[in-house]
Image 1 (cartoon, helix red, strand yellow):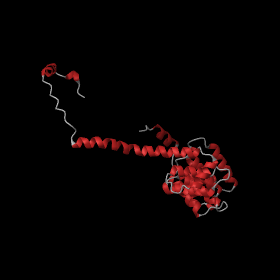
Image 2 (cartoon, helix red, strand yellow):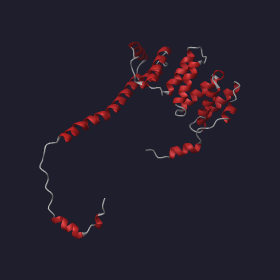
Image 3 (spheres, helix red, strand yellow):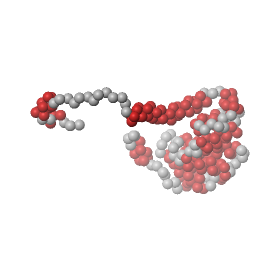
Image 4 (cartoon, one colour):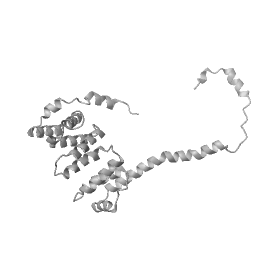
Length: 241
């Protein structure tokens, strides 16, 4: 914007007597303007549609969370295999395990439908790893290891509770877990040393590991820590867009 204090007073005075331009005669909207008027509402509807869909999906998940045990059972009985909303499917998988009599088959079916819709669901992959052990009397097989590995791939460091669960799972099944997955679990769990109230949990894991002959300290010492305290401080101090 120009600085009005630098204007020449004579130019300003002359401008007062200049004739004002006449307004053009009113005309109806031309074809191009008509198209623009029609397009603007359509573009607005297109922009709003994804938001409306997300709100609808969230509302469905919240409705299921508030459902009674009987209503959850009825949902599975009514059939939902054609549903493609991963949030809804993941919620169903979770709730089917909280029933008075956990429905493991429905939990697995809903979980597999959820990852088919969205393979990045790290919590669902972890749940599938556990569900697989329930079919093998607690034994770890190739399907368990695959699901555990996919959970690590999808969410290496994004959730403290998930990191802790996987770490505990690896330690509990130490002899059946390949060394690369053991080291990944230790690497991810090392983040817990730097953030959150995890000291008690890590101390408990260390005691249990040593009681079962697991070289906890040696594995932790070998970890190339993916994040340090100064990284966390720098990240939290960085302004958000």
